[in-house]
Length: 175
Image (tube, rainbow, N blue to C red; front, top):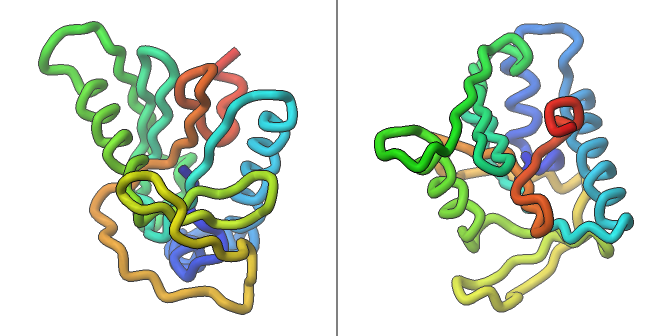
């Protein structure tokens, strides 16, 4: 899941970071670069699904196999300035891996978060049973929408059927 770069919250996120080099255009470009990377995986015969959420991110979460990596999106800091935490699924009770994984699954299955169709560049909305209800074009910068979703805790991941769950550009960590 990635932040929808054409929603008003992407501008809000960029403007909240006290760094003159971080602008709404930079945030948008970074997310679009991640989408292009994911499209490349898809064309390389990898089965990838991507969802774009319409609310401010609070948590960056990467789940790879039995490891979960997380960072907090501080409202006024670049994510690169915040500590990163790693949790291993050691099959014991009391760890953070299992609750983080379950939280991701609950958000992934949320029908209010549209799936991004990598082939058609459309947002696909589904009902609770997974049936498609509507599609809308992705990327109309002139139609940035006001977002009203709950923003207490957000996950930034995309799911791959072959490799588990991967996110954004963590190529260096995954190899």
